[in-house]
Length: 371
Image (cartoon, rainbow, N blue to C red; front, side, top):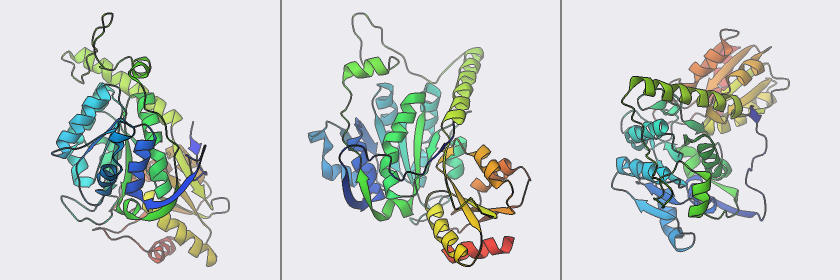
């Protein structure tokens, strides 16, 4: 079932603690508060504040959470693999070139059906590119940058509040489906400062709870229990096909139940803009300015980039005159939007490259060219 999200805070139960912090800092605070067992990462701009904040907070002294700077992104993803295999709530964070190095480990985890959380604070590419913001990793996240037929659950925050909220949500979905989950942010959201409500503390699970909740986990041998073997390797083609069929059935269930999106100003809209993450923040301002000029424009913001809200976009586009896709890249999500619209009306794309963030006025100009 698709979920249209309008509540800006998913973590306001219990005592509220309002504070001002960066998006990257929010990831660190939320990881501690949602009961994470471990963080393994490597610094890279523009997400280094995640591990820096964890080092400053020293959660190993308070909650027992392990925080380790690995020798590389390749090492960190394999540490995540091991922690996830033990049923632990583990996460890492990086930025675009670093996440590229993690792809082998991510596809291994998808094949072995292991839950883990990955934060990508995107920067411009390709290659080493620039340290400025970008959304150029959409394909890498939603298509799977590693080998084989697999999917990663992808959440796209557009605020510091959602950076905090999505940590626990990503863990929830990862363990529910035994599948890797990614928080796909960018340098804008990672570096910007906003007021947020921090989530309440959640106790870390005991070994007994992990054994009960994760019977597949490798958390040690007992007298009456043989150790579980975690692997993505199948030597017999028939067994590998059966594993793939099982995975595809799981992905179909996720597509059916876990689509999330948000709409704004769509009730009377003649044109629809589709944007995610920081591009959606900029688009919202552009729409407010456009409406002051009498232009009836609405926004659909995908929150889950995978599963993608294709049906919802197709339904929302009915009766509209055109769709503009705004993304900070050369045109990636626009392909999914065009597949959803299926030629029913014009679909155009606007974006900036090289780490340049578009201005709201540029978005309005791109919209007017469609009219």
